[in-house]
Length: 177
Image 1 (spheres, rainbow, N blue to C red):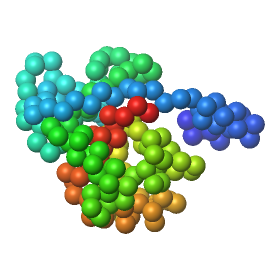
Image 2 (cartoon, one colour):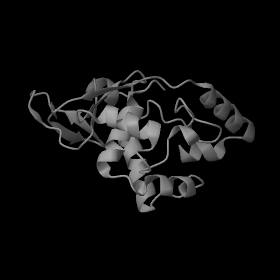
Image 3 (cartoon, rainbow, N blue to C red):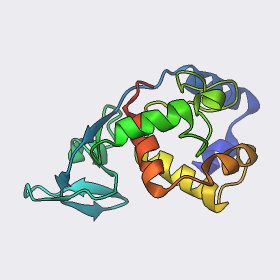
Image 4 (cartoon, one colour):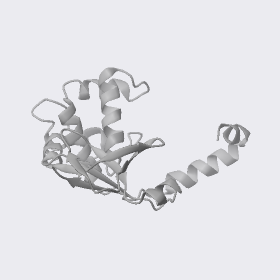
């Protein structure tokens, strides 16, 4: 991919940027609140549900797996995912997003737009992978993220607990992108 991008002309880069920025995001994640989740295993670089039907407690985690492993491994663009989240996390996340949690954080819509689909250069977060959202929040909190968003996000996340991050991510992922 790097060699292709280096070989691309400015016109090709502009055409690719125009094409991809015009594509509308699709809802590919179904968020399910549950006490128990399928047991999973690591295959390649992601989790997959075991075919045995065994379950385990979810605890304070997000478990995100492809609905159809073969379709996902084949890199089918129509692949969909299930994100299992702790019971009550969507409602808790919605409250944090809407109110800021009584000073715990900032209302997400101030920067990400009222519908959380982005505002100017600030990215949309509605419908994004909850695992991705938690990783980003955690990295901002630890100072591991750099870039122009860091000064805005650092104070936004510094008082959030991991449970708060999971709840925020569960709610945001449940929205239509």
